[in-house]
Image (cartoon, rainbow, N blue to C red; front, top):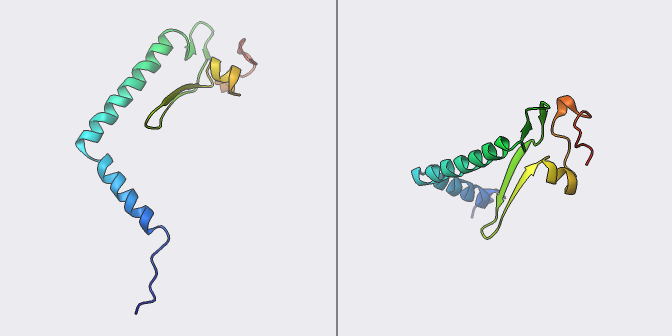
Length: 106
């Protein structure tokens, strides 16, 4: 008999390898590119409407776009955007001009 024990993370590492293998397929890469394009297009749309950056006042209005999907529902949050600052405790996204943003504090 052997006294060799499996490492506690062995099962997890098998799952990690499987996830990496699927994510590296050509089909998965195409899907990721489509997701990235959609997110980028939405960011540009918001920016064109002055939600990301206020070019007139030279102020950053949001710091990131967070997209979460759990298999049945999704959540899109403009991190440190107006809604996040008002309702979720977001921070002033313009670190260089903090205190000069007329919409901060909420």
